[in-house]
Image (cartoon, rainbow, N blue to C red; front, side):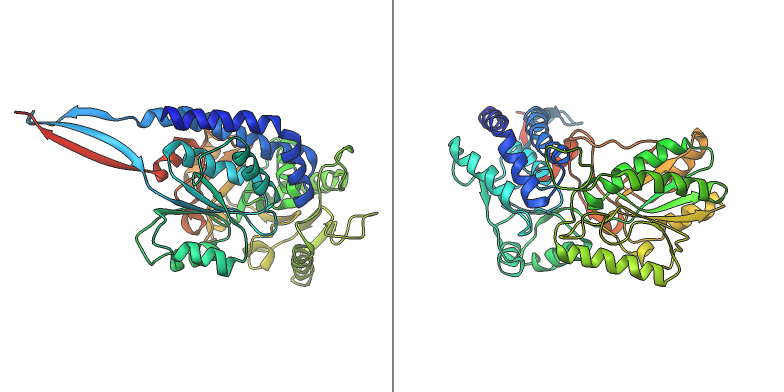
Length: 416
């Protein structure tokens, strides 16, 4: 353990020395705002720091049995080779979720970044080589999903496959990986509800919803996909959302006060725009946005967009948007909105805004999501992150993630 931890600290120090280089890689390959790319980088350091300490909780433990005839030892071993498929939306943050527990537990890891954003992962690998990290500890390969990905999944070598991606990709990976018994740790698609009650701090709710919805151009799996607003405040709350959306600064200049960059590519732009147009055709009311932002009618920049009068049956409410589009639905009954919020196969994140503690507790206990955020939003390497239903298995972050990478072994010795 001490040797692994020493390498984790050495890697952390080398990354700190290449901070601007790595942030620039994210900025260039994603078009992500500079301050947002910094958050990606910071998570990488946080992961190495956290897991280099957390691993010590999994040292051998000795105990006697109830008959006092045996002495038992519980040890923890590496699950073996891990294959990690990364999503493109947070290149280094997603890498951080996997590198920390893999290195701490002693799992050799094969990392396949998305072909849409592999640059920062390659740069990370370059730094690993520069510090002399032993060969085979961290391996990076990128290429066609059907060739590289399916080959890795079919292999009987990996002890675990971990993935950040869509539910459809998760199903494909599990099916392809059924050549042997493997563990799976997957963070998959979301369709997060945000419930805004009339007694909530509406400015706070609007700030948080817009902040997480327009950050990274809405390309965040935990961002609210359906914003349920109590009918009595529906119109006034929509006005707050519109005002904030129209103040978002869109662009690609690390030296300018940019809030939001472009979507990942032109195909993403076309998908979001098609969903916006479909929502209009299905009866949604476009309050602001849609198409290119004013003054940037090129590339894959998309205007911060707000819809009202969205209904549950509409495509925009049933499918994950993964773009800078807020969809507002109205509700009058607490029981009804809970039922509607849960009416999805996804179960990753959810949000509640109310100043009534009993109401917050009621919603939190009833919502079928792996994460329930009340009057705020908080993520960190020390906080478990995972979903229910079709949004995943296992978890990222916290000590719980280490348990996916470790196999317990019991050694029992007779006392003579």
